Amino acid sequence: MSYRIAKGVFDILPKDAEDWRQSHLWQYLESQVRMICDVYGYREVRTPLFESTDLFTRSIGTDTDIVSKEMYTFQDKGNRSLTLRPEGTAPVMRAFIEKNLDQKGPIHKLFYLNPMFRYERQQAGRYRQHHQFGVEAIGSGSPYQDVEVIQLLWKFYERLGLKNLVLHINSIGDVEARKHFREALKSYLRPYLNDLSPESQDRFETNPLRILDSKNEGDRKLLTDAPSIHDSLSPESKEHFEHVCALLKEEGIPFNFNLHLVRGLDYYNNTVFEITSDELGAQNSLGGGGRYDGLIKQLGGPDLPAFGFGAGIERIIQVMLAQKVPLPAFPSPLLFIIPLGEEAQKRCFQITSELRAHNLSVEMDFSGKKLKNAMRYADSIAARYVAVIGENELASEKIEIKEMVSGNVKSLPLNRLVDELQKNA
Ligand code: HAM
Image 1 (cartoon, rainbow, N blue to C red):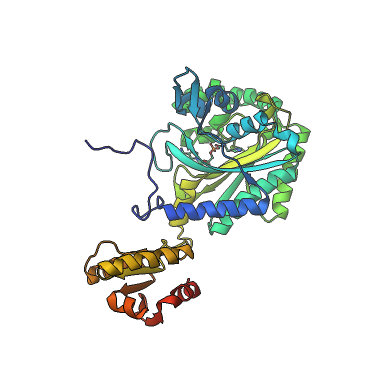
Image 2: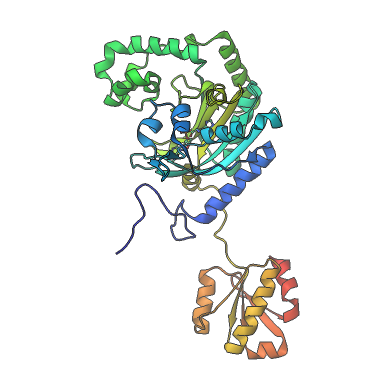
């Protein structure tokens, strides 16, 4: 019997897959995430893989695709309905409220690097387990907070060397504005209802705003003269949005004011944004988020404003590879030791342990293969130096290390090996 991986998910392996699923690329990206979060003062939060189902239905919204079609929901043995986390915001807010973090300071800036689970239709760029780098800034309603978070993501992509990205930004106002706009949009679309795509027809009653970001060409044409949500915005929402746009300009972050950007989760208000790349085809969103001032209160916590984003790690690595940005090389050992004979094997194992205790990356051959094959293996793992150690070397306490790329050989006393490797590490 052979087992195969489940549909829509993937393994992350060293080297094995010559693409975005190589573990050293993930480690690199994760280290970059930690670095930028440190610079911006965001601290890590880790929440469980599953939560009560109603946490997600309440926060994301019952009429969204995520809740209506994509959640991995199950009963546990105590008959509780639990759901594998489809997104990161609701769990972080649950933890924030449960632990009364609001009493521990006025502003909380949190980040996470987590797997998320959505039962998606299989297609390029859409996975049933994907990973997000997300940040959530709780406690400030200032436009500066919006721009700090947007800038963090924009600079993150810049640091990675990504090019040709587009920042889309919009304001969807407050609850009142959206109620008003929903009706205006429905009145506009009603005469064309039969011409809309089946998906948009479904959304007409349940979630008409989502029709705005339909990818269907026919829908897009019909939407050309649709009313604008900006006609429904309150003066406060307008002012907030204008301030955000002005700050982005001052910071030199180019943006595309996209009236059709509404986002697929219900908790947003005012500023929403998304960063896209042409490199990705239909699933072109590299990350997105916005303001969600009512969510914490809605979940039973204090009335605090918040702003955040989630960014898909798979898609980021895919764009990095497509754009050939500088990437870290596959990790390789500094030294590969080949013992000749049983006595040498014993001593070489001790030497290897000693070198590793100095944090030097050293491997040794246990297989006893022929010298030529052992050298070939050292080459295949891109070892920088190789030392062949037999009885003579052990008796004289003198060894030779060969630099594989240049072929240069250096002779040195065994007790100088740590220094020599540290000098060249
Ligand atoms: P979202 O737009 O649903 O937002 O997801 C954020 C990002 O995760 C997307 O832009 C995309 O890069 C990636 N992503 C989503 N679904 C998949 C998938 N099936 N396969 C691969 N990548 C995917 C949220 O989840 C919000 N919680 C973001 C947020 C945080 N808003 C405020 N704070």
